[in-house]
Length: 157
Image 1 (spheres, one colour):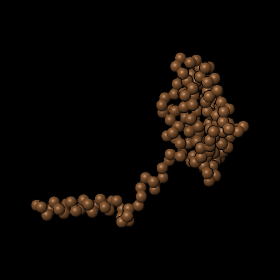
Image 2 (cartoon, one colour):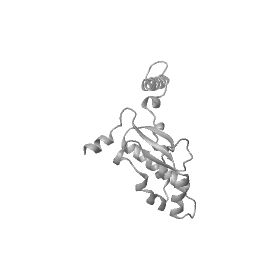
Image 3 (tube, one colour):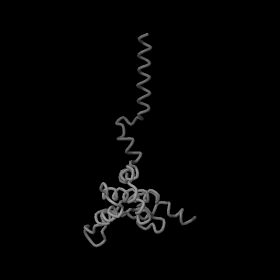
Image 4 (cartoon, one colour):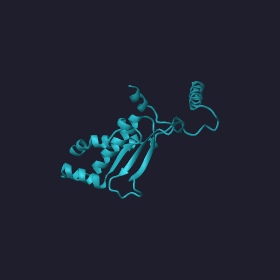
């Protein structure tokens, strides 16, 4: 239980990292690393991203009418794999699901790694937008506006 709890929490200050690997060997260097996606808040998030990323890569290698073996060979030749860095046995591994992935096409939701990408996460501050120039809350502005409308209507009656 302790190991699972430790794995679920944020990995040091930088969060969990998913490493994207080029299966074709065409990437620069000997390690086949295309990029490292950083900032996953917990292991489950990193695992879900890695799984969806590989699922999408396999689907991009699938051609209509291709046999399972052809899809797998195409993925090993041209696709991209993903692994969660330093996750050990708790990290998602493509090898555990490759046969299922190639035998059954993915739904758009199963392939949507972009929705899970931590680089797209938006903070509360960004959602709130820039600060008001008059340093008043929008709620206060709304209340003043409504009060003014009510006052004007009462004056007309």
